[in-house]
Amino acid sequence: MWALSVENCSIERTVGILGEKWTLLILREAFNGVRRFADIQAGTGAPRQVLSARLAKLVEQDLLRRVPYQEPGQRQRYEYRLTAKGLDLYPILVALMHWGDRYMADPEGAPVVLTHRDCGAPIHLEARCADDHKIPSPREVTPVQGPGYRMPASA
Image (cartoon, rainbow, N blue to C red):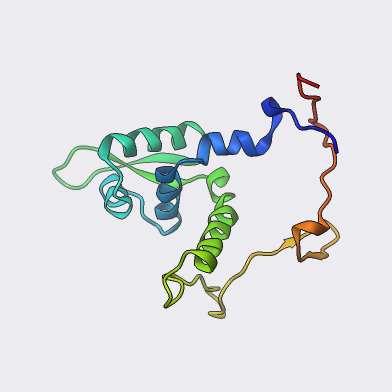
């Protein structure tokens, strides 16, 4: 087995952005259509300063974009909307939710079931290769060096 460079690991880089409770809960709210600061705060329970910092980081990373709005008689405020880069995180959040439903849910079952809007059937995620073969287990996957691979400095 070959070694992976700590400085050049996509998982490490992603965890650097997403690997914090409040960030994932903010994204959950965004995927549920919640856009305004006060509503995101109510849905997550995040402290105001923490929420402000996490929203700023998600905007900086181009996962959310700020869109101005103004209620009559009020000052201009901002909504937070998912970008294309942010929308690409949906399978990650669904995978976390499904894992939590399987191993962490109350005995009554999952608190939320995601369904296909057209037919109403529950959705599920599955891994497929580029030739469209279903990958039923991680044991059927082989990591190979990609074009961005670099030897670890300690090797």
